[in-house]
Length: 300
Image (cartoon, rainbow, N blue to C red; front, side, top):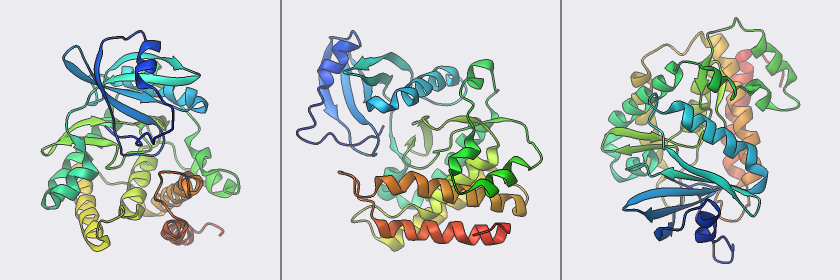
C-alpha cells in the first residue's frame, strides 16, 4: 500500500492516531512511502499487519467515501477491509487490513519482462470493477463526474451529457499502477477509492489510458525503459479488459475529458514538498488534451 513518507517535523503521531481509534495494542509502526495525498503507516498488532491511513482535515468527505466504497466492495473486488474509522485532531483516519504484495508500478520496475502479463491482470481487475452490481449503497457514491472537467470546459461537458446513455457502472477514476497491488502476476488489491463514482465506464478507461500514456517516469528511472514498459503494460491491459472501448468519435470526447481532469489534478501538486512533479511534466498532458480536442471537433 502506498502514501507519502512523513517528513521529520510533521508532528504526526501514529500511536496517538491509533489511540484515538480505540486501539492500544500496536507493537510496531513504520511509515510507508509512495503517493502524495495522505500519510500512511504499516502497523503490527495482534500478530497481523494493518495500514493506518491519515487524511488532511479538508479530506473528511473523501475518507467517508473511501470507507463506504471499501465496505460495499468486499466480495466483488479485492480491496482492504476497514478495521477502524475515526478522527485525530480533526484529521480523518482509517485502519485497513494490509494488502499483500507491492504496487504494480514497483513490480514493473523490478521485473519489466512481466509487463504484458501484469497488464493483462490489471485489465481483468478493471473488468471486475465495472461489473460490480450498482446497489443502493453504491448509489451513495454517485457524483457528477463530468463536472470534474471544471470551469471553462462547459462545451465539452455538454457534449458528454448529450451522448446516448449507457448502463451505469462503478468507476474508480484513479485506476493506475500505483493504486493496484500485485503479488507475482496476481492482483491482490485495488486502493485509493477517493474519486469513485457511478457512471460511464468509458470515462474510467480514458482516465486510466491518460495516466499510462502521460505519467512521467519517476526520478532516476530511465525514460526510454519507462516508455517501453508502459507500452507493453497498455497492450496487456487492453487485452485483459477484452472489450471494445467504444466508438472512436465518442472516445475522443472521453480522452479530452481525461486530459483536462489530469491537468486540473496535477497542476496544484507542482512544487509541493515531497512531490517531484515539475511544470514541464504538464506539457505532454496539454499536447494530449489539445490533440484529442481537435479530433473531437471541440473548440480550443
